[in-house]
Image 1: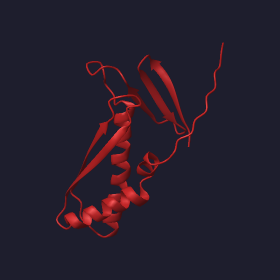
Image 2: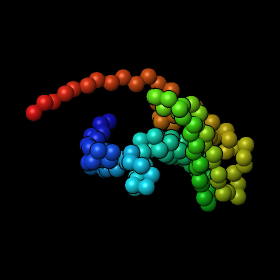
Image 3: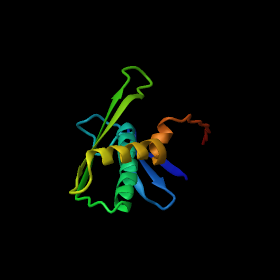
Length: 134
């Protein structure tokens, strides 16, 4: 998997995947911001990744899902690097046949076994650099 990210302005970037799908990334101050920041996208990615697994498992169990909302909150360190020290996902499901116990078990299964984003948050990340001068 490869993503190409390009600077559009000082604090605005666009990331594009191999299929040409793009997302804008915005690090400007709140009054100028029109897109999510990198850390907001990280929380959004975690929520969506877990949700896909949860819905898939529940549908395999023939459960009826009318609405599914994930509220994801993160607490960050005050000093650099301002990494997340705590992330909490609150899953709110509207369903006539899903119990809180069942949703709790499926959510744990998703975040602990299947969700690539959750697993990545627990892994070591390596990097390399290259400078092109013109």
